[in-house]
Length: 399
Image (cartoon, rainbow, N blue to C red; front, top):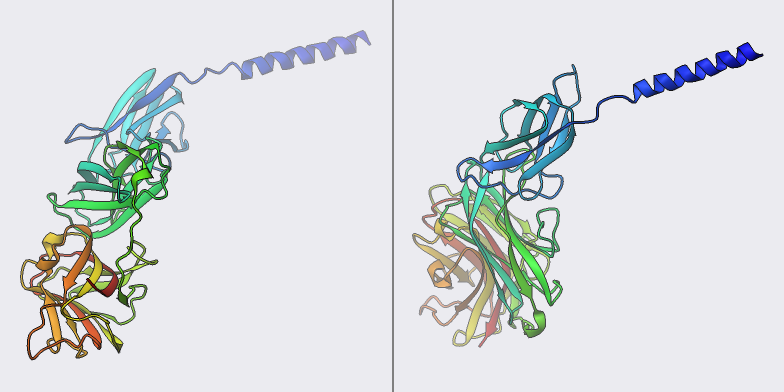
């Protein structure tokens, strides 16, 4: 019996010693940290809060070791504190910048490394203003393309966190671009503060997304803070009038020439949609138009009547340089029983515009019948390049 107890004690002691040996591995002893930096401006490339750009790294001491990831912080920095010293294969990719080369880095102790690359887009001259009476925040900025792909979209973000980005915001105003942009072009986005908490500090940031690059993330501006106080806002009273086209459908809109597509867009001024026109920007005319099924009685006169609508233009420098006009007729076609305006008379700027055009300009012998309007046409004889145009809330009213 004593021998059995002695043997059992030995087995237990051996087990304990073996267990101690297994737990006696070295703890992680290295850290890897740094920043992703614009190699031309030497500034950090700002990032998303999560699901953003990442660093793939793999330890080379072991064959077939798994690839792991480090995600950047919003200020473009990164840090991984639980690594074992050794050689690692490292690459920064799947972000808002050109992927880095695959690098071999000896990580030991506190190892600092800064990825030098280029962002797809740089955002310059970002500024925001708050109209306390209208309850509108307006963001303006310029874009510098580094990648040659068209810019897909632009966004104005608002949030009470300084880390706001494309996956953290309380409110956004988004605009489609779909074009190569001019670095001198100023973009404008407006955001109603109706759904922001009055009396609070909000951060605002501009973003832009490149097209045609798999898993591309948004590029960002710096952050601006504003105090939002809606106590002085005067409710906006819509201009009264009789609606010719609410732009909730593309039915009847015809892409005659130099138009790539006509579609609905959730970026709108009234209702749920606007009608979006993406142009080709090739040589020749730009024409899009609509023939209405039934004559429309505007219920206004030429002396006191106005045609009004909301019009978005992504880049006004691409249009209106040659002979441009808007035709409104009661003949079911262009050039007969019409009134026309030049696009210059609309005084368009980049972004959304409220257009109001007086009808008091009819030409004798070619009068528009204001009780039977049935055709509208937009024409540009010398477009300079591709542009996105949106129309909403086309109506008539009297002053």
